[in-house]
Length: 76
Image (cartoon, rainbow, N blue to C red):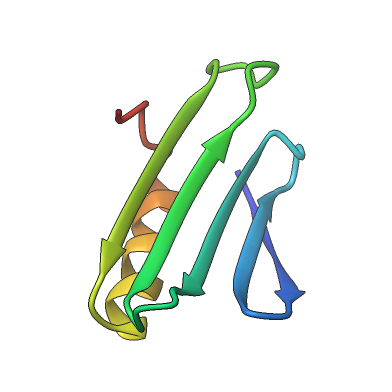
């Protein structure tokens, strides 16, 4: 499924074309980078949530691309 890049004030955000999932990349207060994947319960695949903190923006963007391509399952 296709993802659309959206401008946000403090990072980057992608929304899946069906509107049922989003991926965010943002810099944290400690200068690490947070990556979040959130898929709604209404999505055909069901809900999923992932969050990970990495050291660099490059790592965060790479992880976000991986999650957009792989449709991750829930991680707690």
